[in-house]
Image 1: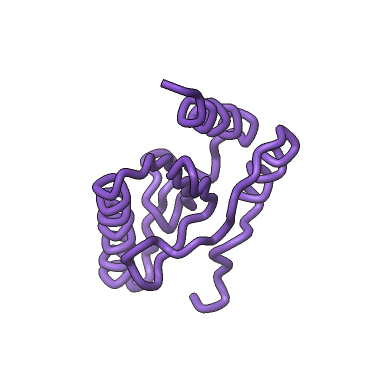
Image 2 (image 1 turned 90 degrees about the vertical axis):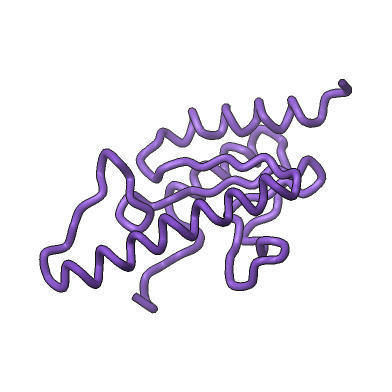
Amino acid sequence: MSRQGSRDTAPEVAVRRLLHAAGMRYRVNVPVPGMPRRTIDIVFPKAKIAIFMDGCFWHGCPKHATQPRANAEWWRNKLDKNMARDQETTEHLRAAGWTVLRYWEHEIPDTVAKEVGATVLQHRSPK
């Protein structure tokens, strides 16, 4: 698992390219404030928007998640902990006033980028 890529995945890079092409500037792989060893995939710090691009296998996508047969109990525990960690991170950020957006790796990058862009513009416009 140490060889498993956890950053700059193809879906994440595709969304970042679309956001950048639309003139949006962001940070990548930013540590979660107050939570060691956890990072946010794409961050708009001033607007306090955190975007996570979750892999279907690692984060338990309801459509595409698979259950390994070899060492099934160990994998089930591992994947359950991943999902619990995701929930804990989301709750932590929301409690600190952040807007948290989570997307699955299979979602269309253009759609994701449009939703993210609309959310960022909503937070930047005067109220």
